[in-house]
Length: 193
Image (cartoon, rainbow, N blue to C red; front, side, top):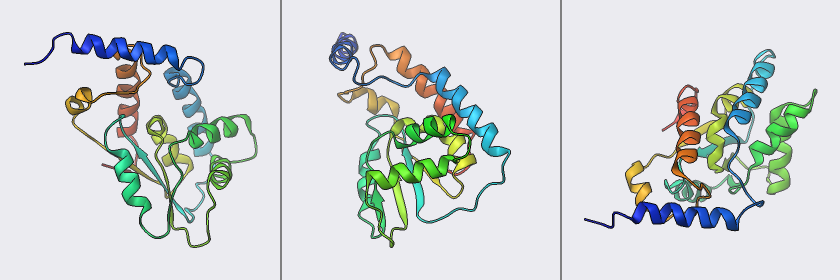
């Protein structure tokens, strides 16, 4: 019925990959991310919510290997939809907004998005498929009104069976991170599942 040592080999491979990528990438620190997010939610909820504007922001979130790339590819084929790629634009905008006293998260995000891709006047929507944006669903709802969050879901058992490039050296760190952020995301408004 399968190799009982397969999961051990998978974790061993992940540890090796983590060592290869050391210093180039790391999973965001959960506690720090949640504290920063709450600070910004508090700050932006005290001000009047600005009206949604064009283009609409579509944040595509989910676990790795859930099919989010396919969803983004399909959406980006629609005329007027621009694919921003899988880069941490929102995380960078959050850091900038956290340090800034006068610029909003929306201003920082729009600036970074414009630097990432040329956004033409007929653009109706921007897709952002950085999966770790799931940690910021509440902040997206509070500070980026009119945005949509598309949660791509796949049976977790199918995901476990897939080869992975994740940099988690153990399953416990990944499970803790994603379980907490998905609970937070489920509390948010505007999530399309």
